[in-house]
Length: 188
View 1: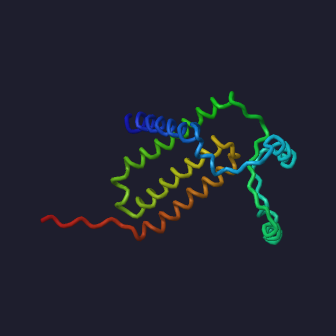
View 2: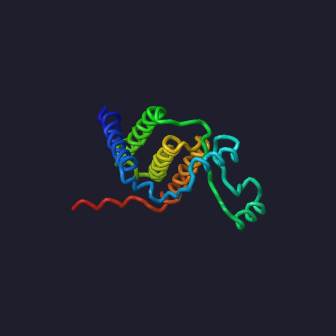
View 3: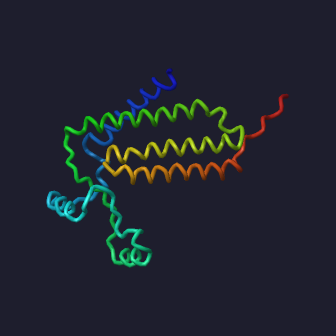
């Protein structure tokens, strides 16, 4: 019970509090790398007219073919736009906070499961692959924060999460062949 409920709860609480400090308190250092435009309201209205629906837009778009993509990329600009047409106010933050806490609980639960099984993680090749896959699952679940906090479309976020998970599975298949446990030293 402590390993799979209390520990993940306390871990989620700690990361939630850290997130509040990191993202919410002045001087807002996390936001310093962001660029801005002179008239945010006019820009938002113009963008709203250019993009027909909520979603993720990549310009140039790989689906338009390699020749067209290369032509437009050479000309520039290249953009990735995540747009949410629906309104979002401070009143909606309660739902986001609950989802964010549940998300961090799941991440902490996965870490707890990993730590519990760590002693057995390197005995056999399959154990090493499963361990790497578990790390990938953890990273993939962590990626879901983009849908929760930054309102990225869930489909796009899931595509990234699945990619990250599969990368760790592939890493596991490769590394598990070469990274093997050391034989225990003979007893004296």
